Length: 166
Image 1 (cartoon, one colour):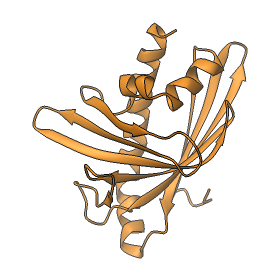
Image 2 (spheres, helix red, strand yellow):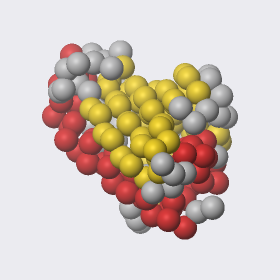
Image 3 (cartoon, one colour):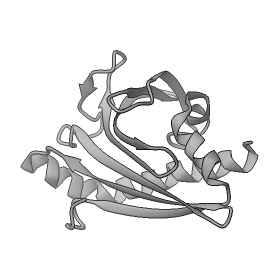
């Protein structure tokens, strides 16, 4: 990850759930559908090929709007590390520009590190633009605070999911 705080972010969350459950919530389609995305939006999993080189393709829907996204998995170390590139997508899974900013980076690298801590799970989420142009880097800098807030809000959804999951 970049050492430039304007071009990367790191969020640490501790979940009151065992590591295996937090891991499964990230790698099983039926679980991802329950928590991934903004509050009040419905997540529909189009496909999930959970392996290096595989893709998670999804849509998130709310009244009056729909967005598509995808993860392309690069590294999977069970219950330890997950590395993927996250992008906005179309219904066919092609990478597209963000609907809110034509200069948002096409690709963002996500590195998730999972650690068991006495029956709880510590998760470190790191992200940064990947292969970005100067205009995309500037857009990321301006939108970074919103990206961090959105990521935290999504992981708040995970907290709610884990409270009722088995």
